[in-house]
Length: 394
Ligand code: PMP
Image (tube, rainbow, N blue to C red; front, side):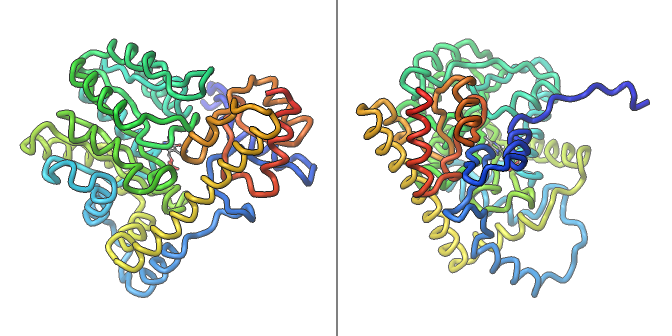
């Protein structure tokens, strides 16, 4: 039977990783895959994660199944981290999921169950896996304008006029912070305008928050998500701990469904449990338990937040260095947007041909849409990249 299978499109980012590995040049620079790396090119296990794992190893006395929604203490801790007290806890249903990808997948499935003809409005561009999963599930993805290729900021007028086309029963997918792949984000006033459009159209927001703490800080990065959650009747939130806890391979995510009134929370909770049961029964526990241990212990939490802040500031420093270097070489501020973007990524706005030229001539690997991973740089490679960008004629 398997001969009937069709070859599936390769994931472009994973294919790029393989090309990088196969490249014999010793001065090659990997700005492709979305993983944080320190100045030595290492993705470290965070100190608090090591300490929490050690504690778990000492105290955990069973590996028996958790509940279908995961450990409730994990949901409580994560809801506190992401939402603070923006929304009454009793209105929120939550399920642990395998990473943020699992949270997105379960969210899309819940949307389809609730409204089989729902359309999901997605930013143009968005994380490619959003589109891929939506296509796979047979859900219509409707792009809304987002990235302004001139300013490399948000095309906010375009975004708003496209979002006005959403209807009740549709969903608008928003990035909570640190937009992937562009690095361009909404400001607080713009978030308010988006909420007004959501309420005028009756569309339900779904917020994907995968980089809390990577942009302007843990609280600031959650602000947009909090105002939306507090400002609309219903909302979905897909969260990932992969980046901010550095637990990528542990597959640690959370899906939240906020109900219009607390009386409806139970139905959402039951739906999330059902969806977990159908897809994999119990969600992974180790990463979630590590995260819970950290968030619920004042010392571990403070140490984690401090290390995360160092990570954030190091990326911000590299951004500024790159923007300054490009300003110096270009003799203009046309690359200032790199300093304005936030998170791990910036979209350079270079053509695929130029991206290919950077790879061939300079061994610089970035995704074909010219997304560069700032964390792939260090103080020594920033000037090399800036020089290559100018010489390639970006
Ligand atoms: N959403 C966005 C926007 C992302 O960039 C990512 C990670 N690339 C995810 C969700 C999911 O990450 P993970 O499944 O590794 O937690």
